[in-house]
Length: 138
Picture 1 (cartoon, rainbow, N blue to C red):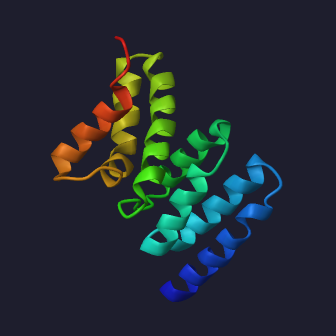
Picture 2: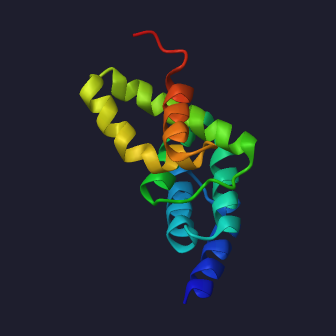
């Protein structure tokens, strides 16, 4: 069953380039993320797919991967950087709503933020938060 899921996720990702619009691309990503969330090769392809999206689509796609618990720890560094930037955009928007909303969103995104950074868990979380908030002015 897991191999079948991974095969299905891989085939789904093969269709990614043919997706007509943002909604279709998010559907393909969601299906692939569900099928291959625990497979490093699929996760790497998912990260590359998100990184290759237009800037306007990246935030939604990065959040989709976060909410599907996709392990992006083995994604290419350049892809991770693009995804961190997309998450930064999202967190900036949440920060305008207030500190409580921002912290709630950071808690939801913590697993993905940790996977995108290196080091022990506490250091990774702090580094991730710092990475997305470094150039903010409070």
